[in-house]
Length: 289
Image (cartoon, rainbow, N blue to C red; front, side):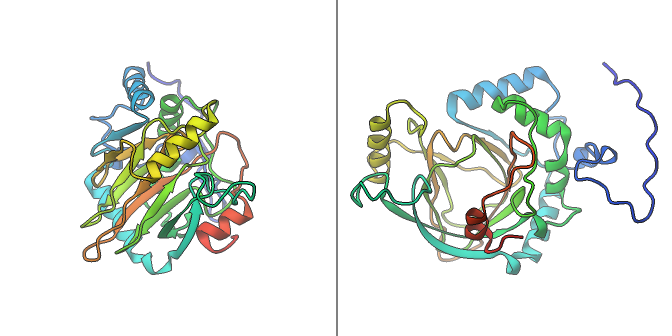
């Protein structure tokens, strides 16, 4: 049904500072960003189909979700700032935790893998970017909340770095096997790598499963290459929603020749005013603000 008419808002004056979720920005530009004819985000039937797919597979890919002109704009803006990205290489275990000194080094809890990539932080994303229009859209947030079963509204990070990121994976770089800390991740592919850069995950490796021993055995099989692996190959503009806390996953190394893999990551919280820890901000962005 049609929405009730709302009172006319005061036109912003010069010098006004608008909040990130200002009412005057509600879904502005979303029709120029998302293929809403193909993906009716407000439809309960469509949301339920997506939820069932995500629950069954652990991942949902919506091809061509972002319109081609919006993808091109976001990619061009990201390439213009690529030199400002924070690049680093680090070793870590799959749980992204400090090593457990009570366990040996080859225990699945402590085995180390390598990750290397560059990240453009939220404050480096163009304010006019289609990624910003998508992230700030109340309709998109409600779609994500409904599909993922989040408890209550989704909120941006309170810090200036973590909400909207663009990851750049150059030649030879990779994202090692790991679990996410958040319940889900939403990404939009901007450009595939010419060679490699495949997203893979191991089903049946839920870190929160009650059978801790079974989880560790499944992690070991995955790290040893003895477990079944599923591969996702999203193309430019494809939206992927993935339950990264419930499945071990990685991005394979990109080839030595060709273009870098560039993907946007849209991160939300189920609680307001949450910030990444100072350790995480230094690890991912090389700075606190």
